[in-house]
Each structure stands twice: as structure tokens, then as C-alpha cells.
Image (cartoon, rainbow, N blue to C red):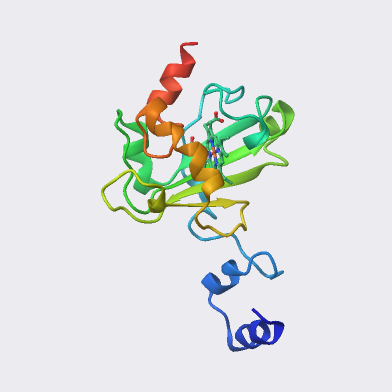
Length: 176
Ligand code: HEC
């Protein structure tokens, strides 16, 4: 997009969707409304100490083994995520991971960043094309082979459609 086009659209009054779409270039960008209020959602990791690398997959991703990571799910996906496997999520499910470098930041709630999984479509199968992904509160959601490639493992490990942190996941790793 050229600057003149961007300027023209801003002048006539851009929709928030448009601004979000240009998050990386627009200083007025706002968090995507699909996850802006995630802290009011169900906190899946409540009462746990969410660190380590229980599935042995993280490497350096999501702050790595020493990071601390809370997970939140919106009302649309709540029952599916907290229910028994197989976990299959309705369209509109959004899951946020609020991640921190260390325990001190996690306890204070400071210096966190977010990654987001969104079930944007439901063709009745467990398919990566039903999901879009975002990194950062103001990140732009879109398809990602990087994110979906690793999250495919949730199907085999937890019988869950691209989401690791289910009731089954928490139960399994609490026993360790
Ligand atoms: C190398 C593997 C890997 C990659 C790449 C990866 N993730 Fe994850 N992700 C995980 C694992 C494993 C968990 C489960 C929790 C844990 O162990 O911290 C997780 C958890 C999450 C969660 C919490 C819900 C859930 O599925 O448990 C979100 C949201 C998430 N990831 C989003 C993303 C996004 C967005 C990207 C791409 C920018 C991404 N992930 C890339 C491995 C990965």
C-alpha cells in the first residue's frame, strides 16, 4: 500500500479492521477486538505454575523452558477446551497465551507479550486452514506455517484440534 492511499483512507475515516490490518505501519493501531479483552476471559492456567516444557516441544518458542505462560480462552471455545478429549473448537474460538520471561514478571503481570490462536473457520475437519495466528496484542492475524506446523502436534499428543492447553493437558502434566 502506498502512503497516499493510506493517508486517503485515514482521512475519510478508516474502519478499525483496516487499521488493525496495517498494525505494523500505523501508530494509531489498536489491539484486535477479537482478543483485546482477553484478561476478562476464562484463565485456563489459574491455580497452576505454568512453566517448564511439559510437551518437550518448545525449544526457544514461547519464552522457552524457563518462561511462564498463562492461557485464556473466550466464551465461544471455553466448553470445548475445558471438556474431555477429543477437543474440537467452534468457529470463533480464540485462545491467548500471555507469556513472560521469568517468574518475577509473571507474578507482577509486567513485561508480558501475547500470542493468539483463532479458529476462523470450521470445515468439520481438523485442518490448519481453519486457524489463523497472531503474535502481539497489535499483531495481525493470518495463516502461519510456523505456528500451525508445531501446533499440529496437539492432535497426536492431546487429541485436540491445534490447541495444547486443554483440561487433559493440564491434568496429565499436573501428575508429573
Ligand atoms: C515449536 C513449537 C511451537 C511453535 C512454533 C508455536 N507454538 Fe504455540 N504452543 C506450543 C506449545 C508446546 C504450547 C503448549 C503450552 C506450553 O507448553 O507452554 C503452545 C501454546 C500456545 C497457545 C496457548 C494455547 C495452546 O495451544 O496451548 C497459544 C495461543 C499459542 N501457542 C500460539 C502460538 C502462535 C500464535 C504461534 C506462532 C507465532 C505459536 N504458538 C508457535 C508450541 C509452539
